[in-house]
Length: 185
Image (cartoon, rainbow, N blue to C red; front, side):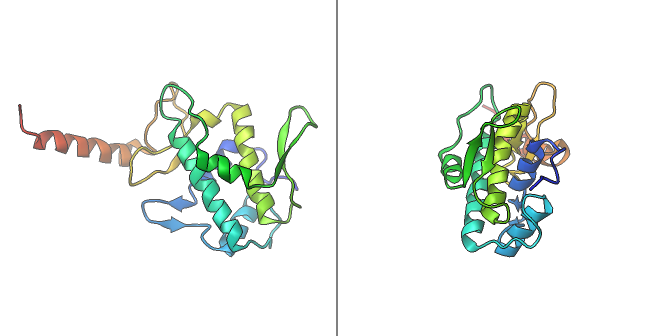
């Protein structure tokens, strides 16, 4: 099945997948099997009407939070290893290496009409993003109440927040207030 978003950078798919959970409001776009199937179909990763089950929802949540943890590790001077939770989530997905085409690629083993195959396509986007050079630019907001994923397009790759005007301001205001409360010593 062709990816409806194949012209997009795979990093955008990964960012959007991680952002299916809004940490601040505790809103989860893929909390139920129908939601997951709809999200995957909406991205062109599975045919419309693809059924998902509770096990698929658990696999999706594990993949999403493993990706969030990996993206949190992208802040800093060197690339962090994949977190164990992400390694476990990836190991549970039906993927294989295909050596056809211009470069090796990860492809789903399951038929394209399954939620597991759709999740495998999300996982394969990690490799595609790495090949495109965007994987290390995927980060999560360092504001603890937010944790929103974003693509750091800054020249020096130093962006820390999803939004300087919201999360950056919250963090800096808290730090300022903490300094003002501290006794001068």
